[in-house]
Image (cartoon, rainbow, N blue to C red; front, side):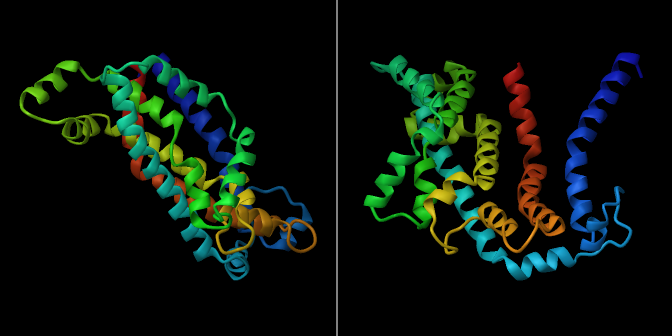
Length: 270
């Protein structure tokens, strides 16, 4: 192995270790009994590992309901963003129409506006529509993504126009071109958009806190945050156990779809 390659591998392992260590410490703390945490012993692995913290979290939190609400909201938002970004990105990348540059400029301008700047009018609109503390309140404000539109548009710019012209000569319509030709060609980008959207909204705390008023539609991140405030003192083993449960679905999704994500990153670098 060349020295440069060995150094690169070593730096990669070092960076991976730095990223993984906090998560491994979180898992280790979740397996510690409270007495060992109070004692303040600094050791990586607990002397007497126990899963009692996970049992306590399962008894205290409505895990199944909050997992179902969080999963359904994150999946619905991600699929909705893809459904809107695909035709919008196609129109901005491959169709000629008056004002295309202006529309693309507006999409870029939307990327500069933080969500916290618009949550008051959005909440007011949902309140007037009597949608506060409902499932649509968790999904509708994020159904369209300016970032997703930009991402899909950039991916479609890399597709040669000759492919589309050949499809039109064969009698394919615009919907056929979009769904049967372009969508498979930009699949890594669509998977990346799904992953990014899913993880962001899976971990979202701010908007569920604003849009929900009771446990009916509260998401798991909000439930974990409120769970931390219960009782006297911070019970770190319970907090860490809840956060391990919260992070597992996102990690599982990334492990399954990482191949598509790496392909999308490699394509963007090229």
